[in-house]
View 1: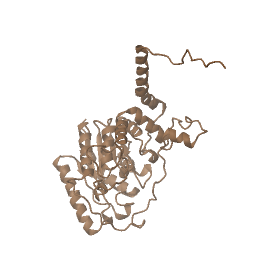
View 2: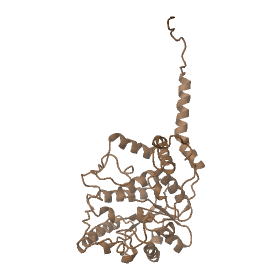
View 3: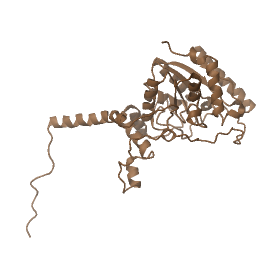
View 4: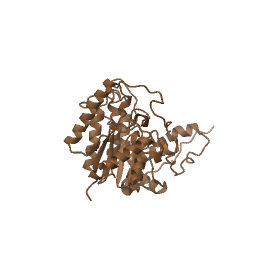
Length: 364
C-alpha cells in the first residue's frame, strides 16, 4: 500500500491590503445603503386616515418612515398611545379623522402607536420621529399610565410590558425590567443602526415577527425569500375590540391608587417627550385625557383630580399650550381611557370650538 501523500495546494488564497479595504468598503456600503434602497422598493402608501397596522406595532423602522412622510404632507401630527391610534374604532373614526372632517382637508396625521406608554413613547420620539420638526404636534397625555405603581414601572417585581426595546436600557434604571446585558446592548444598537432596524422590519412585515432562521426551521421546504413581497400590509378596517361602552362590557368601578408625579417614571418620560419635541422647533399642544372618571370610585376620583391638577400646573409653569377636557359622557368610553367613535367626534368638536388648535399653531 502506497503512503498517503500530503496535499501540495490549497483552495485558500491571500488578500492584499487593498483587497481587504475594498471588501470593507463594499460591506459598509451594503450596510448603509440597503435600508435606503429598500424604501424605494417597498412603497409606503399612507392614505387618508392611515395608521400603523396593529400587527406592525413593534415595527419602529416603519414608524420612522410613516412619521417622515406625515411630517412632509401634513400640517399637524397627533402623537400618543392607543387612544390616538383608536383601540375601539376603525381608522375613519379616530380623533385625527374627525379633526380632518371639521377642517375640510387632510391636515392631521395619526402617529399613534398601540401600547406606547410614556417611557416607550419618549424613546419612539427620540429615535424614530426626528423628521417631525417645525410642525404643530398634538401630544396626548394618558393618565392611565400613572394609575398604579405597576403601570408606572416602579415595582421591583419583574413585569413584562409593551415596547421594551424603546425604553431606557441602562439609565434611568427600570426596576421591573429584567433583561440580559447583551440583549439590552442589542436593543440600543437597533435604535441607532438603520440596518438592524430594517432587518427587524422584514421580520415583522413578512415573517410574522419570527426571526428568519426560526422561520426557515418551521418552513424547511419553502423558499425563504418568498414572503418578502415588498408590499406592506394595509392598516385594515376591522375593529380591535367590540365598540360597546365600558358599562355594557361589564367593567365595574375601579379604585385606582394613582402615583405621585414626583418620582413617577412615566411622568418624567412624558416631560422628556415634550422637551425633545420643543427642541426640534415644534409647537406642542398637550391634550390631557379625557380619562373616564365615571369608572372611578369616589376615593380614586379625588386622587385622580390631584394628579390632573399637578399635570396642568406643570404645563402652565412651562407655558405649554394644553387642554384638559371634561370627561366625555359615560356611554362614549370603551374602557378607562379609550373613547368610542362618538367620543372622538365630540372631543374633536371641543378642540376646534375652543380655539385650542389655532392657538397652538407654529408661527408662519
